[in-house]
Image (tube, rainbow, N blue to C red; front, side, top):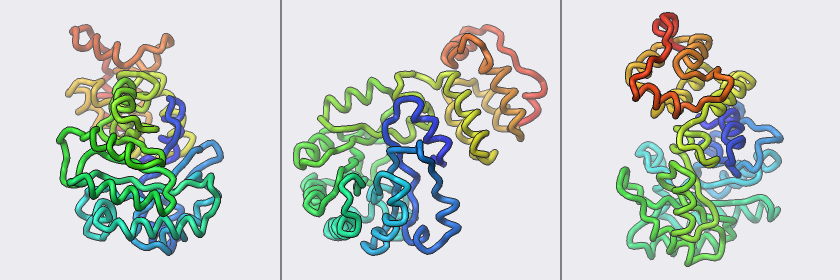
Length: 313
């Protein structure tokens, strides 16, 4: 879902580097259809890291060579906890194979010697933490460019993020480390960086709900919604993806009744009318959705047309 249009959107709001969704490297290597459907970019879509799932040094290296001229780096996803991904031997399953991870990094670097092209790992912590440190040090020795560390184990879901574990990783290696996990506000990201000493902070779901979070907005501003409307139209984003992105962005900015109405819309014009009439997206003074939400919670009237009520887009 995090395609080119959305990456261009978050770049407008202070995101420094974007990742693609996880792509199965073998499929990407063997299928032109996969390459066409799973990966698109532009000259402005930089820095860009293409995220692959793989357990094969040759396949990963070959996929990296395919995107070399279209990205600034590749990342091996070793953090995805989904059962179907783990069952295939990918994602966080690979945390149990640190020597293989090091070999994948080493062979990829041997094939792409350009030091400006990054080869990174995205991992989750394991306990005892010595296992995580051992994995990271082996990856560093193999030539990894940086490490992204999610401060939960693969088995954790809503438990607190272990920022002390991320700090320990940072203190144990000399390559850059990026912290990941539950980042929803810019101030929080700054606090995480201060607490862990990392070189960067990654957000995932937080950006889906608020693409402008790194620009310091507590909630998605109206300007961001307008930018998304423009970019999604420019790129011909399919209706279901267009609507799903807006469902995320509007989650904390609409009432339950309004969300039910929005889910029932079935065309882009109806969606745009909903945004104009219900969320004041067309206000010349760039009212934020936060102001609109405050009005609703204060019981002030909010315009909803019968057309928007009947349709869904």
